[in-house]
Length: 142
Image 1 (cartoon, rainbow, N blue to C red):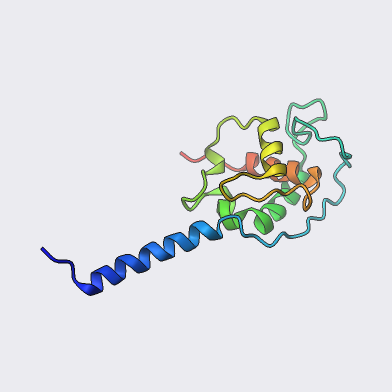
Image 2 (image 1 turned 90 degrees about the vertical axis):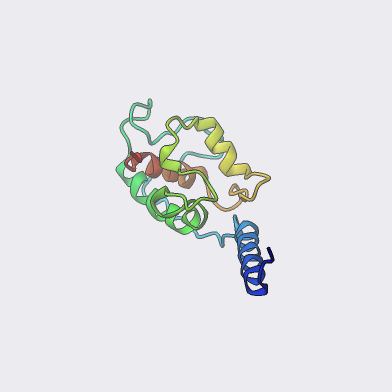
């Protein structure tokens, strides 16, 4: 059995396209985030989300959810999907039942060796925690 030349070309084009997506992962032009009236968290990195319900800092901050939604759309959705629904290259962030806050902040600040850039020079922790608050506010997938 032989494979036709056009089928080979189609397979090659598909592989090159997939490789392009893998290489492009994490290639995001950072967007500035206006953290508005959120309390200024300072430079010392917090290891617990100060905007989440039940923290010593009070109830979930609706302003953080709003700011986080905008920050996520401009900086995260390109790789992690609209409303945190992954297109396959990354996990569905809504499905992560327990995000360890310390793991999250370190991952976002420092990036990964698999394509996620470090955001510590671009986003302050107010923006990072607002993004996490937004994602946690989304309905979980069924």
